[in-house]
Length: 360
Image (cartoon, rainbow, N blue to C red; front, side):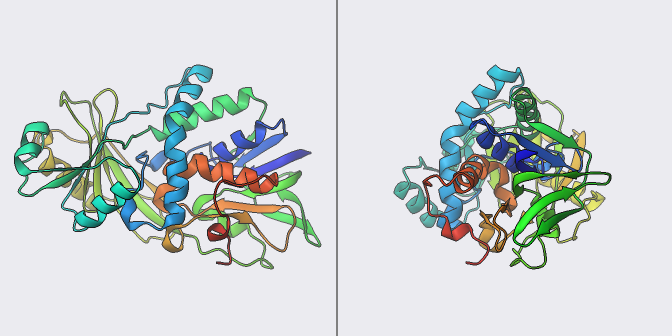
């Protein structure tokens, strides 16, 4: 029997397991595919809400705490596993933003560097972009990470630390007696623990018993593509409306993303491919004759105001939930995991837990 059983092996589940195993607890993860194969794999890996001045304070609170630790976390995982999560301080250029005054005010109030670049400054500093006709915002403190490398490093790290993985095994349902969860039914067995934590992303609500208040978590598909390595230099992230471009180590360029309400359909479409490719090739003229070599989609778990659920699930005394992070799963994962562990271990939390409860 385990001390903690986590259902879901994405970035939220993996980092929650990391927080709990540090205490010497016996931890296991159930994952219906392989760790990090759903929303984590599909994510861009931008380590900031795309426009934090438009998000609520509960989202920014766990985002800010996470940003502080990501470089150290990346270094630790690289040293321990040999897998580089590729943390890069690339900066972010925000184009065509209608909330420039609000952005400047937010950054100043939160000690986040921000620079307003004129048309001439943009041309000098970012000559690889098409000519731009208006000023833009540059945020020098925004970093990126490569989600599937981060997931692979965490999986290897946790395995070495004794965390058990039940991969390719879907959690069918929770069994219970009175107000206590007694196990998780798999296809051919039942796994038991003292505490159960649902970290299933868009699928999380399917496991919560009917006697519980239900969180509002729904899937939204996001499609992305990637261009092969280029020789473009001085690249940073670029946000333009709802689209973004992320440079990777080695010269690859990631482009995202769509927002589609397709229920649990995670298939890619030619229309999205054409749209994303056209956006990137228009903004980066050097890509005009280059075809993307990868195209994928993932389902992101939305929640009201994008505020995740990080809480106990009543009326059960040993069931918890850490899900509903929408587009900020990678951004907020370390602080979300720490907050979940603090709740489970009855430790003092760094931030108020009330905004993250199911009943708000």
